Image (tube, rainbow, N blue to C red; front, side, top):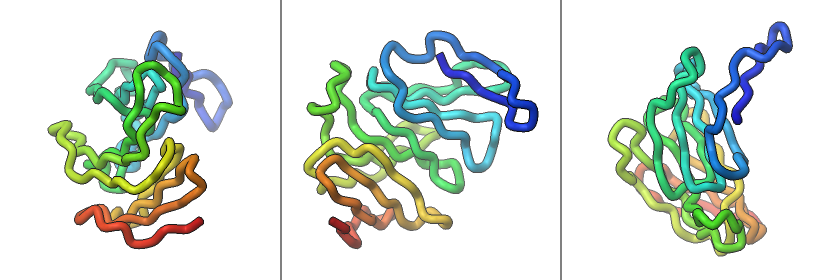
Length: 150
């Protein structure tokens, strides 16, 4: 289940039952619309939710990380194994068009599970962190690797 809390009162605002079938390592609100929530599960799904209604809006398969771009049009994901074993997760980050579900850019250079990612303020860059001990900075339009920090 996913629980959404009212930050002003501390009260439970909504519960989305049975959202995923396995551990959920990430949830993120859309930066452009606080009614939309993205959840990423080790079950290999990213689900977009309407928080007000609790209804599922969209789903994407084969992913275990959900980070929405500043404009809300792109979602960064890390590929996942539906077996739920993070040792088998690939080290690729996919930038997916939220509207069409197509992969715009594949970022491939990590040698381990990508556990975190963050877009720059304008969305032109994304940083990804991996269990391989590196942080990589990428150009989101070309997919070019700009820097590796070890």
